Length: 163
Image (tube, rainbow, N blue to C red; front, side, top):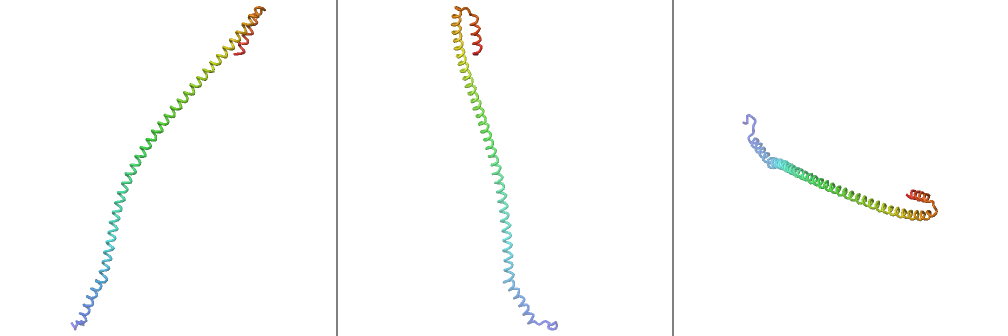
């Protein structure tokens, strides 16, 4: 092989150097780089798994929130129904109280009117009695004098003015 220009000792030394270089590179460079790549791949996979878990948790939380929201809406509807019913009852109570008050005021006014009518009737009787007494006294006194018709006219005119 020397005719080809190949030196065996140099070839063996170069093969040894290449093997030594490959061994050194694989031990100190390739292995750490591969380990780094494996770690990075593992972190990415872990991150993706974690993201899937978070996504699942968010979906579960969203479902819980929807259930809670539906429950809250239902409770709000029940509260609104109760409030409407209470308002209706209070409205009816106020109407009943107002009617009772109006009836009481009407009865008081009727009683006051009856008392006033009774008082005025009593005054009228007293005035009529006084007029009758006065007229009788004048008639009796006028009979003696003879102007009976004039006394009746005067009494009637007085009776008309007082009413």
